[in-house]
Length: 507
Picture (cartoon, rainbow, N blue to C red):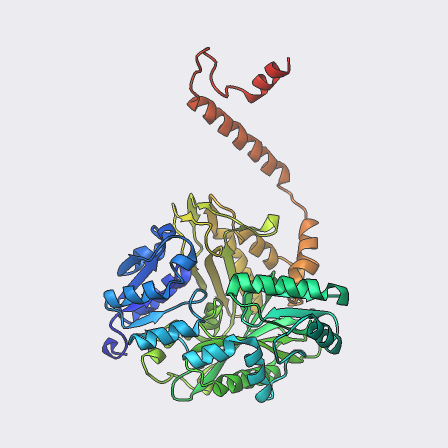
């Protein structure tokens, strides 16, 4: 495709691995790129690989990556005629898409009307209902007060979920088991929603027990052409955050795949969708009943797993469609080829409830070989800041069958080495060895209901070696500190021996 039909220069309003992913797509389309960064991200990899880079403010996202006026100013100053928002930050903000249009800059994403409607969970449920897509039983209006909550919950039936109308990412959600807890948990959900999204509106829906989380990748253009790229299985989650995905799903057959795909396309067409998006469903693994959950109006974090099994570059297609070109394919052109698994590499400690970690990456070795893709923002010497989500990289592995894909993913994870900070790599390795995952027998409660218990009971053949290594490291650290100590006036080195000093004090 000739570059002169696309854009002169694209600003990427994001950071980390997704910013690099978009920069690579632009480079292949011969489009110059502009990165923006906060003061905390001055040395980040996306700043180094872009053609130009501009600082947009201090570390807090509210003063940098969420500053629409500053980002527009940089775009105009640097001569950009398009902005790609990636995911998170401003990617699902209709007002930002409208501001771009008002300033004569193309927003590489869906139109503001579609973002606004599908970003409101109540309105999105109404759209799905109008298209005869099954909904999780629940409300089609915001919750008014405590009395309204008690009445609605009694009609829906316990357990129920309280959900933020404008929320995502598991924020502003609470599960309620008993009527006596309802008022307290509704207030907690409202408070979290206000803190995260600036709005208190919540609603109630029935809690579906042990569902599978299946999502359909859709794509539309401005000419009314909408297709789907079949499903991704996203049921390996921790606190509603996806950790591992795969495609195809082990429970979706051709009949269910057709129903899910047709439902997702009907919803997208109903709002005039014209970019990449994801329609999410909860599926009963036994009965194959499915219910509309929500729609994400952006490029999904998990999009590489779909790219791996369909051979389509969704990021480049977003740029082409935003430039006014029609989709380069029809539904009959899209088919699965083989199997793919995606592992999220986070700066988190999986042995301590996935506690977020910040610090310097002292050493890094990334996996390679046939069918292995590493979308990463890491490099050796990078200081991982504490201000943003802990997402570092995505390891995407493809093979001809699911069995071979799991085997290849194990091999790739065993090669992946990050020194200096803890990551979720060991967790992903253990999931690849879990018999329930291998059999495809899992749901969204997998980590809490099965994995954690079985993982805690696993044999740890190298535990003694690990403990010995910790003792040796502590000894060397103490010895190094002694070497750096400064003599005090009485001639005793400071900190010469904590044990001896303690003994002297006690005597």
